[in-house]
Amino acid sequence: MSGKKHSDSLALLRQIKQKALELGFQQLGVSDCQLDDAEQHLNHWLEKGYHGEMEYMARHGSKRSRPAELEPGTLRVISVRMDYLPPDGVVASQLLQQPERGYISRYALGRDYHKVLRKRLQQLADYIQQQVGEFGYRAFVDSAPVLEKALAEKAGLGWIGKHSNLINRRAGSWFFLGELYTDLPLPIEQEKPVENHCGRCHACIDLCPTQAIVAPYQVDGRRCISYLTIELHGAIPIEFRKALGNRIYGCDDCQLACPWNRFARYSDEQDFLPRHGLAAPELIELFCWDEATFLNKMAGSPIRRIGHQRWIRNIAIALGNAQSSDKVIEALQAREQDKSELIREHVAWALAQHQ
Image 1 (cartoon, rainbow, N blue to C red):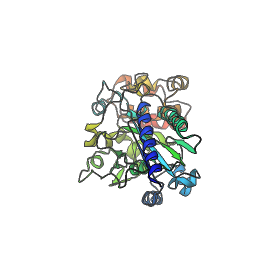
Image 2: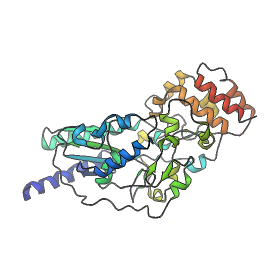
Image 3: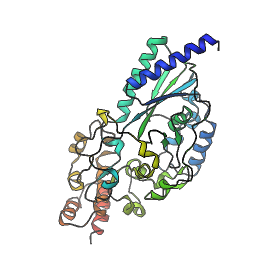
Image 4: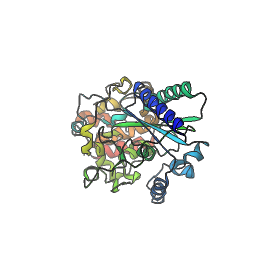
């Protein structure tokens, strides 16, 4: 690349970074498409069966780890991050000690992040097109076979921690990732991977309620509470039900344990503010929702995709783990004859915990 072209590319990248900040992203980086180590790690994870029912993780072969196979012509990947932790009147760790209330993973309290980030990425692509003319690109937000954390790590946004989440030294891990695959030969500023600063720390491994982090950097998805409450369609294995506590959608324990999250900043993104009292909801109230109420209140929320049946399944377990009271038992008994066999089974288990 000639000196002038390189200078022009650097100037363009600076403009793109500035626009990303204006659009509400906290950071942007660029990487190439070489993911050999990540591909090997993924294949090992799949061979172990750690993906459980998430068969989509194996469905696309090498397209997940080879961007140019997924989107022909891809030369670079633009990775962005957007903080999502909402200013919280209830401290997350304290909420886990309130068994009458439900804990929902902090990322899911507001509007569906897929929609928020995808819209902003499209606006970023539109801006780039204004600067360079027509160019090839495709936007992704956790919705296609993309190794987003490996790409973000290569782009300098952080390092992948022992819990398998991306950690940023100045921002912790409470953020979303998004990508633009592009045919623009943008300069790569991050020549070496971000240094891993996990060191000897194993707080996330120790705190995981179901021991899902089976070794540093290895998560057995089949044991993970996020998998059990979101991805798993059938019955939640009995061996994990007590460990779920009051977690009814996802789990943040490994992030709550991470010392780097003392640097995390609250998001001022309005779309991520809690809706419908979900920051610290009463379990009994949620358990009374019929399907129409669930669909109405969860419109525009990532929670909606698990459906009403799994929502009630999860809450039944939380009520089984709650302190015994007439109200808890009455709420469970009201669903003993539910039309769903899945719900009936979990309600029966929950009631047995109060005998």
